[in-house]
Amino acid sequence: MGSKKSKTTETYKPPSWIQDSAKQANRLGQKIGSQKYEAYTGDRVAGLSQNERMGMEMARDNVGIGQPYFNQSEAMIQRGTQQFADADMSQYMNPYIKGALDPAAREIREEGQREANRLDSRSASMDAFGGSRAALMRSENREKTIQSVQDLYGKGYAMAYESAVNIWGDERARDMQAADRFRSLGDTVSNASRLDISTLMTTGATDRNIQQAMRDFDYQQFVEERDWDMRNLSGLIAALEGTKGSYQTSKETTSKQSGGEVAQALGLAATMVGAFFTGGTSLAVGAATGAAGAAGGAGGAMGGSAVGNFASGVPDFFTQGSTPGGG
Picture 1: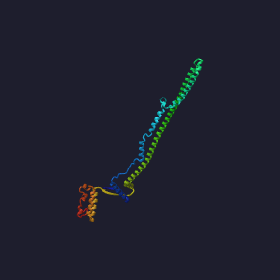
Picture 2: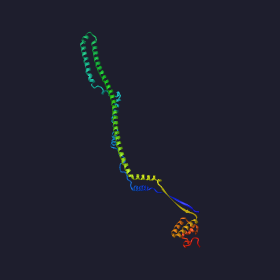
Picture 3: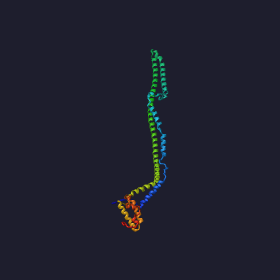
Picture 4: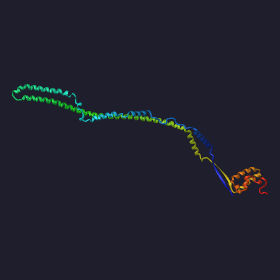
């Protein structure tokens, strides 16, 4: 007995619109593959804006802009903390003090001299009674005059010294106040400079961001135009991938009989016999010969069997015109 072998081929037969899309994708692919690389020649990064450059220059030029005021403040602090013992009080004393006291001292001396003259005029009468009363009174007048002059200068210079001390103290207080003002001025100048720089940098950054956005837009437009075919191709491919399995397929099954040598020989003999009586000997022989070859080497295995004879040529009983089984 023989066995039957079958082979099934499944063929996809997409609709015409899918075939057209596939052809279009192929054309786009060939077009893309033939294109040379196109580089972007525009600016990708926006440079520093004018305000940013001005801000950077100002920051460089204004380094330490408040330092002169801080130096002045330090000098005022050093003066304000000066010790009284280290001060030169002569520069705080009134230079006209002696000139102001000398007339008063001269008047005291003159008054003392007049008193001495009066005592001298009375000394003759006072000496007539004996004793040293006149000399004693003249001595007291002289001492009184000297003491009055000394008191005048002493009090005058004492007052002048006290005034000088007050002036010195007021000056030290003013020095400390000036130090605070210079320090505050230095802070104000520095802060104003920083504010100006910050304003320039902020406004400059805004301008640069706008310029960067414009460059990004130009680049994006370039990329979209350059990659337009690639985007279309990707869309077509994705659409074609999505249609798989959505259309009918055809299946074709082919069968091949395989069996023993006798069965093959009988089948081949029946084919050739029919061809002989119908006048189609040559066509039948060719078809049978092909079938015999497809059967593998079955005829050769029989060693002179009917299959081997049919495969090599037409048998004798066909060429002799006799019927099968005749003598």
